[in-house]
Image 1 (cartoon, rainbow, N blue to C red):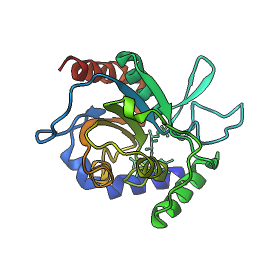
Image 2 (cartoon, protein in one colour; image 1 turned 90 degrees about the vertical axis):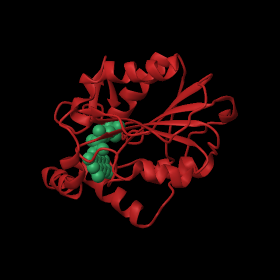
Image 3 (cartoon, rainbow, N blue to C red; image 1 turned 30 degrees about the horizontal axis):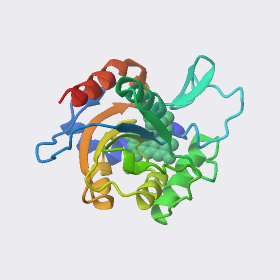
Image 4 (cartoon, rainbow, N blue to C red; image 1 turned 180 degrees about the horizontal axis):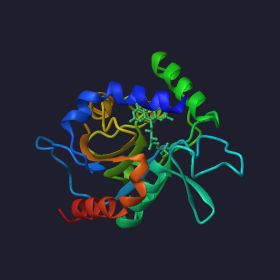
Length: 221
Ligand SMILES: Cc1cc2nc3c(=O)[nH]c(=O)nc-3n(C[C@H](O)[C@H](O)[C@H](O)COP(=O)(O)O)c2cc1C
C-alpha cells in the first residue's frame, strides 16, 4: 500500500522531477526576493514524529521518515531544523497539533488528504509568542500531498511574518517544493519567502553539511 502511494506521489510530480537534477538537495531561484539582515532567527518545524504517538518499539529502520538518534525517534524535518538551529545558534520551535496523527503511515496519508480537501486548519498546541523578537525563521516541513501540511497553514493563520525572512526547507519523497512556496507567499504576502533547500527524506542523513553550509552562507551575507 505504501509503495502504491509513493508511486502516486511520483506520478503527480513527474513533470517537476523531469525538470530537476538527480541531486538529493536543491535550492531555488530567489532572484526577486529581497531579504532583511539576519539579526535574530529561529528554526520552526513540523514533522510527523512529534505529532504522532508511536509505540516505543516502532521500527525506525523500515518505517518511512523515522530516524533513531541516540535512542530518540526523530522526523526528517526535525533533523534538518536541528542542524539549522545549531548552525545559527538559535531557538527552535516545533509546530504541534492538539490532535495526534495515526501511527500507521497509510492512515496518516489518507487523513492528510481529507484535511487538505476540507481546507482544515488543525488546532495547535504549540505557541510562538515572542515572534516579534525574530526577523527570520528557518522553516522546515515535509511535503504533504504536494503542499504544506495543514498544520503549517494553521501556523501561518496565527502569526504574521510581514517584513520578515522565511527560509523554506522541504523534505519529500520525490515531489520537491511542489506548490509550497506559492502557498506560503499567498499566506504571508508581505514576508520575504526564500526557497532554501529541498531534501529527499531518504537522504536526509547525507545532508547535514548542505543544511549547515546553506545557513552559514545566509548568516554571512
Ligand atoms: C501525509 C503524507 C503526505 C505525503 N505527501 C507527499 C507528496 O505529495 N510528495 C512527496 O514527495 N512526499 C510526500 N510524503 C513523504 C514525506 O514528505 C517525506 O517522507 C518526508 O521526508 C517526511 O518528513 P517528516 O519525517 O519530517 O515527517 C508524504 C508523507 C505523508 C505522511
